[in-house]
Amino acid sequence: MAENEKIPYAEFGERLVRLREEMGMTRKKLAEMCGVAQSTIINYEKGTRIPYADTAVRMAQIFGMSVEELLGMDNSPLAMQQAEALDKMRDISGKKGEARLRRLYGEAARLAEGDLPDDKLLELSMELQKAALLAQQKLTERYTTRGNQGAVERKSEKTAEAVKAINKAVELLTSDEE
Image (cartoon, rainbow, N blue to C red; front, side):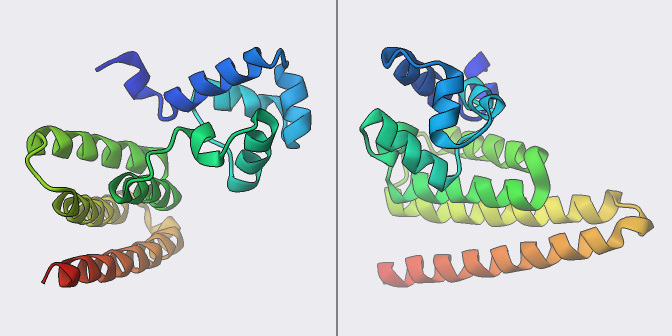
C-alpha cells in the first residue's frame, strides 16, 4: 500500500499546497481569506480533512476555478456515490468506519478488475455501503457498554435511515434497467 493511500485526502492536500504556493500565498493569508483557522488549512494540506462546501466555494473563487476542479472530483455517479457513502459512514461510525468502507471499496475494485459496467459497479457500491453500515452497527452494539446505550440507539437510527435510502436508490437503479 502506497503511503498516500493511508491519507484520506492526500491528492487534495497536494493540489492545495501547489495552488497556494503558485499564488505566493501563506497558509495564514489563505486561512484569513477563507474564514478558517490556519490549523484548518494545515489539515487540508496534510490531506486529513477537506473543506466544507462554503469554504470550498471561497477557495475555488480565490484560485479562479470550479469547486470540482479544486477538489479534483470525478463527477461520475459511482465516484459521487462513494464519496457520499464515505461521508455518511464517517458521520455514523467515525474514522474507523470510514476506513473500513474505503478498504472494502478498494477490495471490490480489485475483484471486479474492470469487468463490470458502470451501472453494476454503482449497484455493487451501494450494496457494499449497506453491508458495511450493518456490520459496523453490529460491532457498535456488541462492544458498547450498557451506560452508552443511548449512543447505540442514535447510531442505529442513523444506520436504519441510511440503509432505507440505499435500498430506495438500488430499487430505482435496478428498475431503470428493466
